[in-house]
Amino acid sequence: MNNQLEFIVDKDSKTIFMTREFAADLDLVWDAFTKAEILELWMAPKPYRIQTKDMNFTVGGRWLYTMVSAEQPNPTRYSMQEFLEIHPKTDFTTKNTFSDEHGNSMGTAFSIVKNIFTPGAETTTVRIEKVFDDLATLEMMSTNGFKEGMAVCTDNLAEYLRSVTGK
Image (cartoon, rainbow, N blue to C red; front, side):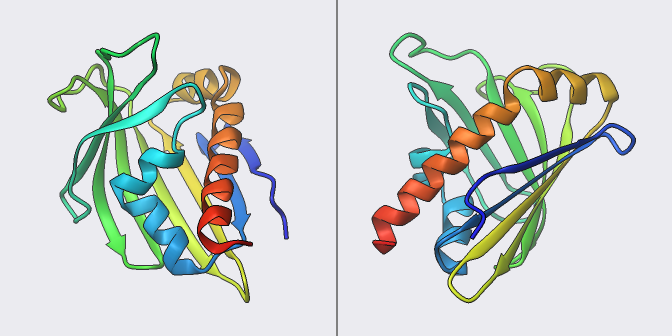
């Protein structure tokens, strides 16, 4: 099993490809990506934590959330994922932007993210394809800690899944 995050930057397609295998069945991994109460357990590098403002996991719905910490308990910047496509237990696609607490965009930069889930015998592989609207945003994200942050987050997810499965 490959328990490290594979992270590939393709400037030609303005895409970051991330892949990670988890020692858990598809149902558990799918829930970890689609339920706010579970996302809040792993989707932030410590000492930060995710705080969900609202989530409606349906096509046309959204997940509006922010990262908080003891040092930053009152955030002013949120992230919003709008659900564009959902194919249960297979994949889902979002449009991701930074926003205020009401979901109003804070600029024009965005990415389209496809999360693909592939079950194995005793594992589930997740492939994330993050396509940026412009090369400058891709370059900023790929050189300012995004890779390291995602590696920590996927390690957090693996730890959560071990706590649930005992594996």
